Image (cartoon, rainbow, N blue to C red):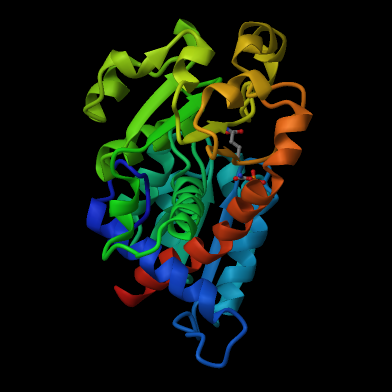
Length: 314
Ligand code: CP
Ligand code: NVA
């Protein structure tokens, strides 16, 4: 693994390795044996969109691994005034040991990775949010491990035969990363969304999934599910469509009627930030707050695993 650009570009064994290492680093946090593979290395965070979790967990993670983190707002550097991604990649590769990029177009992180000579991590684009989904998988695995007497050899085996359902804007970055994760790890994915918020036929084909994973009826989608997941209805960059989105997506809220249709111990997850009363009811959010904030914490551990693997290869 030279970069972490998407779930689509990861293999099942790379996902397994990152999850295993994420668990190890979580157990070692604050201990003397905690590794510091980033010693002497500088990583920059180049962010063109807002962030709480991703920014803070990467900055803290880089420091805990012994490295230095620089935060570069996209509009504070010349990239925001029209300097090309290509030239930025060539320059920053002379100073840094890696970059974490949050932006709009997936092509920007891909171009940086192609032209530069340092590892690139996608910290969210319009197409994918791979770090989030890896943290979600870690959180799901923790729950499955708690319920199981004997841990399987591979973490990935925990997900076999399980069903996850994504509610709301199923064409957004988080949903698309979930679709690819389901294909790679062999669990079932359903999308509860109106036609206009379902992923394109191209994305479904690339993920080797069929249109039958899309459900227009939210309760039908939830039936017998193991995991219910949602994200904001108005992703960053879509603010002008707010009113329209809040109207069309209203029937896809995760609320008690939806949780009652799922399995009794089904997990409810949210990548955050959450808008109670929109994509999730306040009641369901609070009932599942432990899982949701575990997910947020696991961003730190899994990102440290990603940084460690990318550093080891340099
Ligand atoms: N879930 C997530 O990526 O949160 P931030 O936008 O706060 O980084
Ligand atoms: N889909 C959301 C995720 C936020 C973490 C967005 O892109 O704004």
